[in-house]
Amino acid sequence: MAVYKGKYILQGLGTITPEMEHDLDIAYDICMSYREDFPCEMCGKCCHQPNIIIRPEEIDRVATAGGIPLYTFMTEYVAPTGDGMFLFRKTKPCAFLGEDNRCRIWKNRPQICDDFPYAVSMFMSRVYLALTNPDADILDLISYMDDTWPCTAVIKNDISKKVEEGRKLVSPRN
Ligand code: SF4
Ligand code: SF4
Image (cartoon, rainbow, N blue to C red; front, side, top):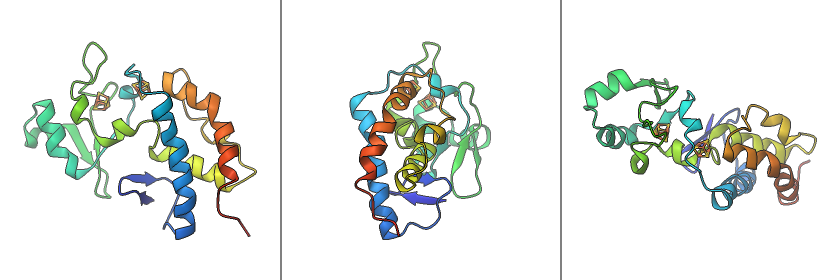
């Protein structure tokens, strides 16, 4: 696993070399372009899935926003991942999803919720892999995405074209 831009854990990638960094920047720009073009519709679908990661420095902010005492939050709401991060225990749906399907702590939600699905590890790492492997099909790589969600439907319809354009910019391979 590698951390990129201080916050993204890239699945399947180890140490980031300078050449990788250049190509990761291209992958990052592609992923984040969707946030500009198609902002989150706040449908709440992603708030029903597990693997919501919270960083240690976010714990205080999120617990306070949710009105949960820190001890209760640490013992009942999150579990350590073993690599310095924490996972939400209460998902399907998230404990902070209101009955109106809106996040109750929207302004203070974890960074990963703000990044989803644009720059979270699975999508970022697969766009990077598609950019750097001309034979890879990005649609195969992101077949895990449920395209009944507003944001992922847009991504699946559009990503092949962006990867094709991005391949012209990546570092030459031997
Ligand atoms: S599934 Fe996509 S559109 Fe819906 S709330 Fe999550 S990020 Fe927003
Ligand atoms: S914190 Fe908010 S945005 Fe994040 S999963 Fe929970 S309800 Fe959804």
